[in-house]
Every structure is written in C-alpha cells, then in structure tokens.
Length: 151
Image (cartoon, rainbow, N blue to C red; front, side, top):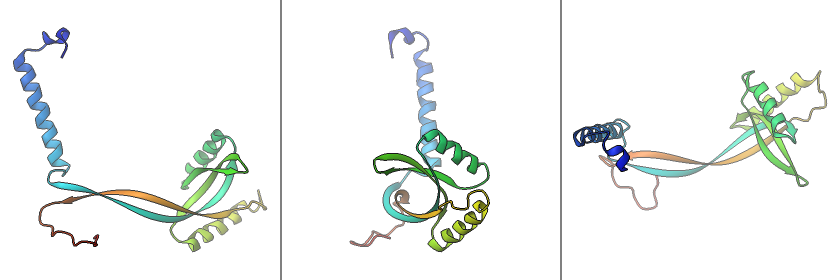
C-alpha cells in the first residue's frame, strides 16, 4: 500500500477488513462446491443442422436481419463464409440435431417465403462444433478410474 493511504486506516481496521475478505472468499469457495473437487475437461464434437436464409456482405445488415428474426422468436445466427475470396455473413435459422427435422423446417420456411420470394434458395447446412465441457468431480467416495476407461 502506498504511503498516501497508510494513514487512512488503523492497523486494527486493516486486520478486520482482511479477515472479512478472507472469510467471504472461503464461504464462496465452500458454497460453490469447489472444495474437494477436481475439474475435468472433456472435448466433445456436436453435429447440428441449420437452414441458410440469407447472405450479406456488410455485418450491420446481417445483424439487423438476425435481430429482426430473433424478435419473432426464432433461433438465428450468422457465420462468416468466403466465396471466391469475398467475405459474406451467412444468416442461418434453427439448430436441429436431426437432418430430417431441419428438412421439415426448411419446407415450412419455403412455404412462408413462397409469395414474397418464390425462388429463394433455402439450403440445409451441417455444422460440427467442438465443445469443451468442464465437469467438477468430488474426490471423495469415487473409485479410481481404470486405465483406458473414461466414464
């Protein structure tokens, strides 16, 4: 602590504040369940399917489109794609674990766009994401894992 602040608090006050802070830290550690647990990182791959709605060169236009559809209760997102060296922001809707469900949703959207944009190419895209999941496991009451076995 710099000399400028030394005179603001007595040593007794500083000791009390440190004790309070340490107690709060210990309580939060215990309450969050972190004591006696180890964290295990698991990498998993997830495949999902979405319907490609639009492509925009400008990010602001993609964001506007995503926000408009999100307010209508749809799960919408954009991803960057390069086509012949040109960057596009592709807007997708839905997140389906089964391709058949994505196809059914695509047909529903096709019917919705039939009057306004009858030739709108709605395509299904397959995405693969690697997720990092961190699980906490208690060290107590767990048998040791067998070599080569990951439960």
